[in-house]
Length: 254
Image 1 (cartoon, rainbow, N blue to C red):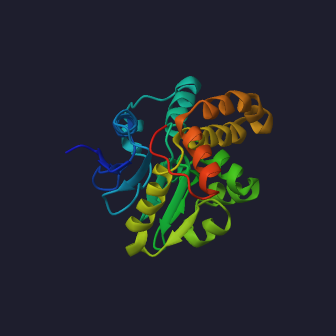
Image 2 (tube, rainbow, N blue to C red):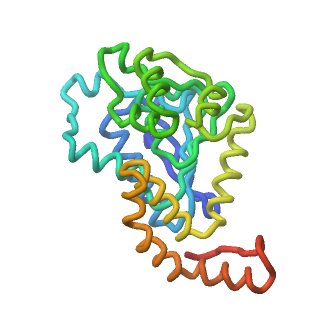
Image 3 (spheres, one colour):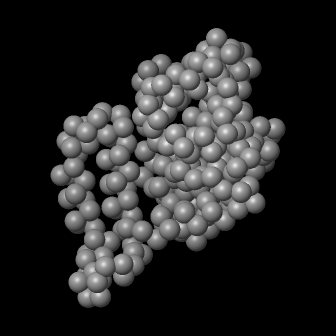
C-alpha cells in the first residue's frame, strides 16, 4: 500500500496521507508527497486537497528514521523542499483532523488554505526534544500571526485547539469533524472552477511577499500580470463581464 495516494475527483486532485499509524515524516514520505503533487499537476487537476486516511493528519517527524542515519538536508536542499511543497502551481487546501504536530503542522502551513475539524489539535513540539521546527514552522507562524505567537507556540511546545488558531489567522476555517470532507471539497471545487492562471499568479505573489516582502512581490508583478492577460481565462472572463455584468464569468480552461 502506498504511503501517499492520489486520485482525481473531477477537477480536484485528492492527495491522501496513508502511512500507518500516524503519518510520521521521513525522507520516503516527503518524496511520495511531492510525487503525488506532481501527478495531480500533470493529470490536469485545477486544485488539490491534502488530507489523511489515518487517525491523525500527521503527528510529526519519524525521529528514529533521522537519528538512525537518515539524510540531513543542507540549506540548498531545505530551500528546494519547501519551495516544492509551498509553490505547487495549484491552490492546495489542507483538510486537518486529529493531530497536526511538529512537521505535520508545518506541512499544513505550506498549503494555501487550512480547514480544520473542531476536534483537531496543532502544535510545534520540537522544543520538548531540544530541537526546533525543521520545515520552517516558526517563520511561517510569524508571517501569519506575528513573532509573539510564533515564539509562544514553539517555545512552550503546547497543543492548541483550532478555534484559537483561527482567531490568530493561522488557519482559515473550523468546522465540525463530520463536515470536514464536505467543507474542504467545497472550497477545493470553488478554487478548481476559478481562473487558473490568475489564481496561480495570486499564489505566487502572496508567497513571494511572505518570503521577500512587498518589494519581492512587486518585482514579479508585471510578469505575473502579463501571464494573466495572455490567458484564455482572462479573455473569457472579460467577455462574460462585458456581456452580462459582474459575477457571470465561468472558467473551464487556463
